[in-house]
Every structure is written in C-alpha cells, then in structure tokens.
Image (cartoon, rainbow over all chains, first blue to last red; front, side, top):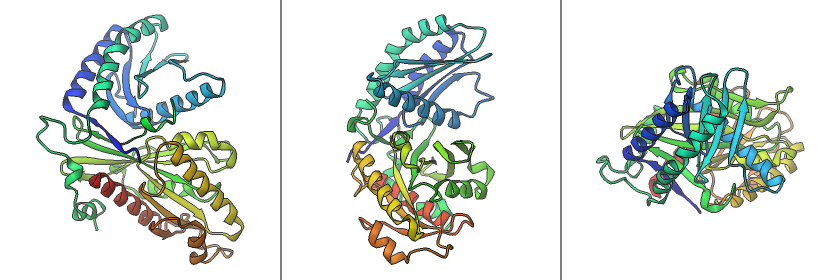
Length: 164
Length: 203
C-alpha cells in the first residue's frame, strides 16, 4: 500500500510564503493560494480575510480533479492551467509539479495576461520546493525539535480527543 | 496522472501551522445515508470545532460531486487534529466523480443500506469501492476502514448477521446506525478516526 504522508516543515512553509508574497505583489492579485491535490491548504498570501480557506481548498481540488477527468476523456493528460472569468473576480489555476495546485484570484487591478506572465515566472521555483518536499523520506523533519507527533500517540490521547 | 499509485499521499502534516490533516470518505450505494451522516455530524458539532458544510448536489438534493465538512477534534502533542469528511455520489452513473474523491484518502466508512431490497446495491457498491481503492494504489485489506449498517429503524431490514456475511471482508469494526436520528453516527466517526490515527502512528 502506498502510504506516504505529506510533511510541510517550517522551512518549506517560509520558502513557499516568500514566493507567494512575491507573486501576489507582482501579479497585482487579490490573493494567491497553494494547496495539494487532495484538498489540503499549504500556504496563502494576500487579502484572504473574507474567504474560508478550508472550503476554498476542497472546492479548488475538486475542480482540478474534475477537469483532469475531462482531459482524460478527450485524450489529454491534463490541463496545465484553468481560467474562470467572473464579473469582478477571476481565477487562474495551475498545477505545480503534478501534485500541488496554485490558485491566483484577481480583480480589475490586474489582468489575465499579467497573471499568466507572473505565474509562469514563479512556477519553476515553486516546483523546486514541491519536489524537495515530496522527495524527503517520511519522519520527523530535521531541526524541528518536536519529534514526530504521530509516533507518540497513545490510546489515552485518542480517548481524550473524544472526551471519553 | 490522476490515479497512479505514486501520487497517492496520505495524512498531511504541517509543522508550520502545527496541524495534522486527514481525509475520511463516506462511501456506499445511492440513498444509503452518507449525506445524512455528515449533516448530523455538522448539526451536532459545536461551532468552533467545525467548518462550513458544502454540498455539491442536484436540484433534487442528490449528491452530484461531493459533500464536504471539516471538523477539528483537539490537539495531540501540540498538533491540531483536523479531519476533512467527504461523501461520494452513490448513484451508479457518477462513477467518474466517485473515483476522484478517493484521492488522498486516509480512511473509509462504508455506509450500507440495511433494507433487503438494497442488498445487491450494497454488494455492487462495496465491490466498486475495492476496485477504486486499488486503482488509487491502496490495499482495501489494510486501509483504515469501518462498516456502518444504516437504516436499522426500517421494517424491511436484513438481520445484522446476514449483512455482515454479505459485506464484511476483513476484521472491520461494524456499527449499526439510524443516521436520520443520529444513532450510531458519532460512534462510526470515532471508529474510523481512531483507526486513521493508529494507522498513522504505526506507519
């Protein structure tokens, strides 16, 4: 059985954040959002006060999964980018290193052309971090100092979660 | 590459946010009560521990793509434990969507409809689950899994022993339920969450 956990370290997160903040600024976006294909949020930058990130991650992953299913039906391996145009806000979605999804939400302060250009510039460095993150063996990340939390779970911890 | 074994990732551990995120999928034939399970959990979970319940449904309230809700149970060793609960569309012709939702799953609840008339539908759906898990690179015999026998309040139900003979294929925990009044719903959820966390521990 394939059973590898996805582990994001503090260092991964700060590297992602540095790029996402740069992309958000350079693309004049409302916000940029990084998630994995199973619908888990990784990092975000920009104006996200009004947005529920958990729902956004789940629905965006569903959107990408459905579109990849359509791609296969028409003989494509997948689509590199998706674009949804709204009256006020638009979405630009790209798949990074086959495993992670980059969502850019922008309004009239930006344009599709600018967003596409900036995303292309940031895709390679983002892919490099994703590849690093996924190629690391499972286990406690070096330098974190807390150890692997899952290895220490006891039955009592589980009962405590449910208030038993 | 949507379904290759190499893409199957399980729990998502974020050391920066100090979170463990797991994905649980409720599977089963059409109208067996998957959405009702999730709705009950959403209704009875305290506000601060749950997120929005999202239902991508048809105009007649049949699940079109999935239902989704996040819940947070508390902390283990300083890590917030969050579970993302999904249902699949049960109707046979939504097979393509159903398969997509299993991507990255950490644990599965199979909701069986206990009525005699749904016997074949249960068996077909379980076989479909096993095929789709295998297609995603999971071993159905080892993935965290529980069986729920739902609709125990209806007059035409089969005895639990008979349902087990039809549907049990490993030493899985079995829970009897009436999702419309909440009986067995949280017991089922606790059963799968415990299995998921113990599986993560033992890996």
